[in-house]
Image 1 (tube, rainbow, N blue to C red):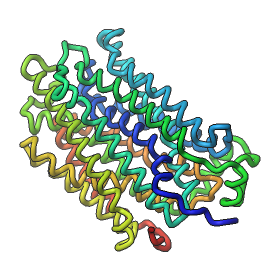
Image 2 (cartoon, helix red, strand yellow; image 1 turned 180 degrees about the horizontal axis):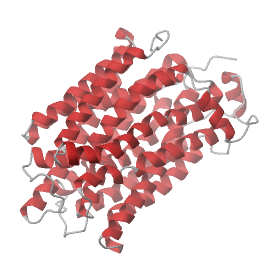
Image 3 (cartoon, rainbow, N blue to C red; image 1 turned 90 degrees about the horizontal axis):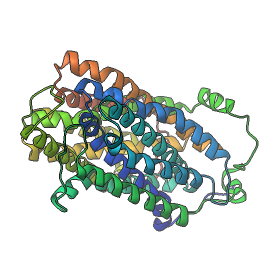
Image 4 (spheres, helix red, strand yellow; image 1 turned 180 degrees about the vertical axis):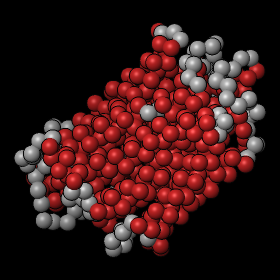
Length: 450
């Protein structure tokens, strides 16, 4: 079995270019889904339950996509067919989600909005999961941290665009950021249209320009053929039972990390609207000046989310240098602490402009969450199982989000008296717990990064 050759920076970029489009879609979803659902009539304590469909679909879809992409070979390659199909389905959902109220009224609009959110997330998972496996397929050990860091950089760029689009529509193109009761503002609707086009364009770049090893070359570098016989879907359960020890150790870190992230995505708009824009606590339906203020808060959350994603893009480029100095475990723990402090600081800040500083720590944590666990894990996964184990690892992302979705609503309602800002403080403490949990992770030998 031969060692895989080093790839050029351009080759690594083409492999992950489509991920930039995926994260533009995620940026739109994370910054606007709660806002859209509230426009359709959702109550503050119900928001996390509507978001529940996202991790549920991810938990079901990603292991299956990982398994089938391990066993697939077409004229497009192993992973590319899944990129393309997932993208086309997701673009349909992106267009439909903000338009639910155009075809349905009242609770029906809310229901179909949740359905389109589920379709959007399931499709994103179809497109996203094989990207992790593609990087691990093509890069040798020395370039793996670099590969995931470049991927995280592109993720950050895409998420900045997705997060900032509604603000840009209003402040650059003078599109309204408010709408009649039960409808979604035009700046959000048009942003989703642009996001769908950008998503598709980025995926096509990867499909057209990225290279995958053919079965014979893959066998030369990995010692096995991707078209080898399999034991069927029961193989997923056997692989789950035999998961690498590093995956279990990272599971606790992932639980706290993604529990906190989910709280942040669901409750930031509501928390900031009340804590920094002066809107009354616990009210879901706004009129007049309050609705305009809520629209401004929603646009500002998009800016803040864009800032933390921009920070993550920059921080991702220096992660390999930090790893060389202190190791992957310590790098991830430090980044998580910065994120926890950033989220907790939002509880004490009532000036919207000052929240920019909170996003610095959040961006550092986000970059590390997207890169370090995968860099640690990839070295312990058998080559022919890269897709399925990356999919199984998604359990440690989706399960904490499901737990958070089930608990966050009652927490906000009964413990926090409908004050969403407390959910953001809780998210910060979760990231601090994730940092402490890194003590229990064994990264093995430190691999020098070129």
